[in-house]
Image (tube, rainbow, N blue to C red; front, side, top):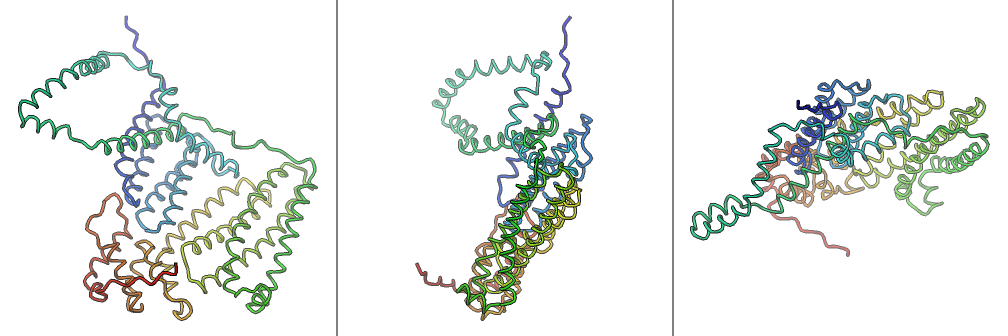
Amino acid sequence: MTVVPVLGPRTKLGLDIAAAGAVGGIVGDSLLRAMPWGLNVALGTTALVGAGAWLVRRHRVKHGPDTAWLAITALLLGLAFLRRDAATLAAFDTIALIGALALAAASLQGELITTWYPFDLIRGVISATASSIFGGFVLLLSDIQWRELPQDDRLRNVRRVALGVALAAPVLVVFAALFASADQVFSNVLTNVFAFDAETVISHTFFIAFWAFLVAGYLRWSFLSQPLHAFTPKPRTVSSVVPLATALGLLNALFLMFVVVQLRYFFGGAALVEQTSGLTYAEYARRGFFELMTASGLVLPILLGAEALVHRAAAPQVRVFRQLAGLLLGLLAVIMASALQRMRLYVSAYGLSTDRLYATAFMILLLGVFAWFVWTVLRGQRERFVFGSLMQGLAVLASLHLLNPDAFIVKTNLNRPAAERPFDAKYALTLGGDAVPALLDAMPRLSAEDRCVVVHGLLAHWDKAEVDWRTWNWSRARARSLVRNQADALRASCPAQPKEPPSDH
């Protein structure tokens, strides 16, 4: 009596994950090769989330309570690529999408994301990323028990057919060569049948394998692995709060010294700045913002690390930490206000750019995160900190989408007095499709030289016939339509190619 092997639950799930990975490889190669990303990312994200939902339903996987809203968040982030055409915003969308997928993988493993602390967040992202890269090999070599597959007549016939093909191949080559030499028409038929571009075949094979292993590795980590706690340090408590208090006290002293200097400049104004530093007020603002932004960002990991050392300590030690941390954050609030004031002066003098806009958004996010730190961690509710901070990050990202950064930059720079700082038409043309409607509306207000720069730049970039459907994006489609509809009027308004200004180099 023949014993038929029985597939174990892990092998069944592994085979389904491998099948989903194979489909994901084909989908990824078909969609994500086209740039810039648009509809293809939305479709790819939907396919990945759909595959995860199918596996959950098919195998009755018990998951954490956060899985559903994380899946919806990933879908919304994928759909975000359909709307705005801003390269920097798309980069942040990509980072947020990767983060949402990493958190969804942890939730599928049963973890409670809403109670995570920063070290858990780092662990989740690192482990999900590493497992997505290497998990496909583990899936094929370890998780799937190939000996459990039934060895029936169909599988044996597949092997027999493969053996027959291998035996016939040399003979087929010989006879095909003879027949091709004897008849030119038959030679042409063979040439057309087997004509292919080796480089194209290799490229598609590589990308199919790349996306297949990435999707399979991600799904394998989500469904077949257990949470990895190697990146989360074990709780440690300081025996004495004196060293930590000394370090925080010195930081407070330094911050206080800086705040005193900043208050002098706030009340002294431009005259004091120029007298003491030798810089104009605008140059002073330009040199300071990004340094203050970096300093502000470094405070958060310092405070989180210090809190991790004392949160299990005695109540007096925790109270000392909270008092020093609260004082430091109060001083930091003044410094961040100074940084935002510098950015306002910076933009007033030099105009708005993507770096300045997104740096300002980051500072606003930091202010919210620090306020949330005070409300949660310093009040003994540390488990609420990470979730609230993530929600603030998503809120800032959504606000940027509503703001429409590229259009906002163009409108802000156009509304500045031209006598103070001329409009930089060439920089405006480097922005995405969201900037095109604002540029077209402002055409009558531009100087003749700037108008010609804008006209020829828009026609060169947007008046194109061929568009890949995979890269479709609402803002790009609208910009292309507007430019094409006004192409004749634009050419008539500036028929000559603008002359490049002489270079200083």
